[in-house]
Each structure stands twice: as C-alpha cells, then as structure tokens.
Length: 441
Ligand SMILES: C[S@@+](CC[C@H](N)C(=O)[O-])C[C@H]1O[C@@H](n2cnc3c(N)ncnc32)[C@H](O)[C@@H]1O
Image (cartoon, rainbow, N blue to C red; front, side, top):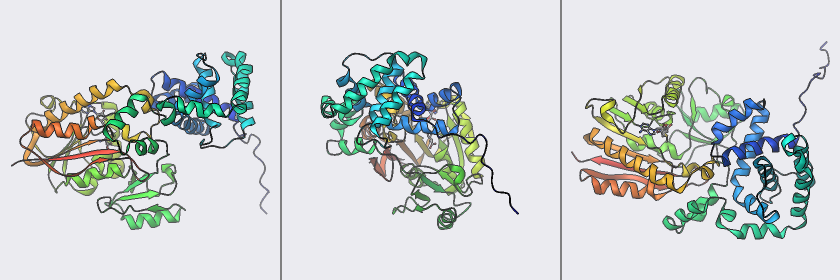
C-alpha cells in the first residue's frame, strides 16, 4: 500500500505582494541610478537573499514598471508635486501606481495594492515613517481618477513611456511609424527559437515540442527557415534537447543575418563583434566555414565558446578591438564580414525595458562614431567580390540608414546589395537594421 503523501512540514508560503513591490522598487531605483537591470538583478538577489521565485517575480514586476515609468512619474508628480524621498519610497510608489493602471499586466484589487504598499513601508526601517504618507497618497489617487488623464497629458514621456529625446528622434525620422515603434516596446516579446539543422529538422523539432506540451509556429518567410515562435515563453530547460544543442533562443529579426551574409563552404568569415555568439553559431549551423569571432569584451567572448560547444560547432575566437585590425591580424582578408555593431539597442526595447531610461541622447553620437570607425577599419579587410553585412538592433536612423548612406558615400568600391534595411519592431520580431555591401571586384 502506498502511504498517503504527508504535507511538507515547511512548504513554501505564497509570497506576499509587499515583498515583490519592495524588490521591484529596489531594481527600479538602481535603473534610475544608471545601473542596468542585468547588473542590478543578480546583485540585489544576492544581497537580499532572494530565491529563484522571488527573483523571477521581481524581474517581471520591474519590467512592467519600467515599461510604464513615464506615466507613473507624471502621476506621482500630480499627487505630490515635490520630490519624494528617499528614492526607494519614490520607486515603491511608482511600482504601486503602475499596478493600479488600467493597462497593468497583473491584476490586483486596488485595496490590496494600497495595503501591501503600506506593509512594504512598515517592514522597511528606512520607510517606516512614510507608511501613512503612502497610504494617503494612494487613496487620493483612487479617489481622483481624473489625475491619471492629467498625468498622461502632461508630457510625451508620460504618454509614450519613453524619454522625450527618444520620441522626438523617432518622430523626425519615422513620421508615419513612430507611434507603432513606441507601442511595440510596451508589449512583452515572444520567445523565438532557432533549430540547429545539424542536429534535427525544424519539422521534427516542432513535433518534439508538441510531446512536451509546447507549440512553435514557423514564420512565413523563406529566410527564416530555422525559426519557430513559441506560443508561450518557457525556461530553456523545458526545451527538448536544449543542452544537446538542438535549439537556441534567438529573435526572428536576428535570424536574418546568417542567410543574408550568404557564406559559401570553406570561406573565411570574420564575425567582428561576436559575443554572446548567437549569429556566429547561426552562420556555422548553416555552412562549414573558417570563422574568426572577435569581441572586445573577453568575458562576453567566453559565452561564444560556451555556445559553440553546446551546439557542437567550432570557430577561432579572440578578444580584440575590431576597429584596430593591425592589433589582431596582420593583413588577413575575409570573404565575408559580419559587423553586428555595438548600438543603442533601441530595437530591442521591449526585451530590455530599462534601456530607454539608461540611454542619453549623447550616446547616439558616441555609438554612431564607433560604428563608423568599425565600418571603415574593416572594409579594407574584405576581399574584392566579398560581402560585408552591417547590422544593428536599433530603430534610430543615425545607426541605420544614415550610417549606411554615409558609408556608401565614403567608399566608391562599395555596392549596396539587397537587404531588409530598417526592420521596425512588431509582434513577431524585434527592430533591426541590415545593410549588405559588396566590394567591387
Ligand atoms: C550587438 S552585440 C553582438 C551580438 C552578437 N553578434 C550575437 O549575435 O550574439 C555587440 C558586441 O560588440 C562588442 N564590441 C563593441 N565594440 C567592439 C569593438 N571595437 N571590437 C570588437 N567588439 C566590440 C561588444 O562587446 C558586444 O559584445
């Protein structure tokens, strides 16, 4: 006879909302201090001893709050026209206000949000004095819903949840699409897979997904012949054969790089900015080529080696500044060059909702100069007849069309070849820019 299952003596209690609100506020404060979420999250998790569930909840909530921070800031200002101190209280209130928005992704009863925010104050020595203030402020918000409309009308930042300079840039260069681009950044992205054809066909992998209750759809695009878009994001350890290299996670727009570069077997290929190696691996999955993968950041380059090992692929990897070819290669020329350049990452704002608040308008000038330097340094390393693919995950013209046009104007031996140009972000894929240059023979 099987003994009835005993209740676990220390079964984990459901986490109270006040703990998640507080965790989220810590992350949002870090971002407002200029720290990226990818840095802040592991630090805060270690410092505050969050378990995996707490960490996941803090991340999910902070994503939602950062997506609506423009509105929350304006609303807090309507409710309390002075600076709220300390910053942790300010961001606790921002977090609570986002949870009370009609468009909030998680639905809690209003009184729960208020009570739990007050509880978060009471449980935190530095905020204990502010419990009454938080209670009064949130109750005032509930009593005066018209303040929300006033807040949204206060500024483009409040209406569109992006910095004013970002909105103005898009309005100037994408007069018919800027609203769609901003709206796309508010939606959680899908999880897209790239099936490794050296291990399994896409159809067989689709079937393997079904056996574990997952569904992946193939995009209707011949260039995206390895892609599957999952109905629901899942942890990678739920993906059949992930550890065995059957599949990788990569946005559909990023999967244009390898087919566009059109590498032929045995060709010498330079992947100039390779880490963490998504596109390096994709190139090698499609064609056996002699690939040199560079990245300036030695730590990130390690991830290229890890990815290639998992997928059973090989490339030469080297930590080096691609803009200074003499320091890493004496005169070698390549048949293909992939320049996936450092950029604002404005095209992947939906995946990293902290980016919009971390970037400054002046960053665009610095980044565009770095892209120009990389393009000009690498062009002489391309064989006549060879192809260079310039890629950014940006929606700003300075990093896309303007950069490509200026390159063509500077290099008489560069011929523009067919490429998608500016891909605007939409449900199925992120925002990317692609230009392909062929060197006249
Ligand atoms: C957009 S990411 C590359 C993503 C990668 N291609 C992939 O698909 O996984 C840009 C990379 O460029 C690297 N980088 C920036 N400046 C560089 C330079 N001058 N030389 C080499 N790598 C550079 C950064 O460290 C970063 O890893």
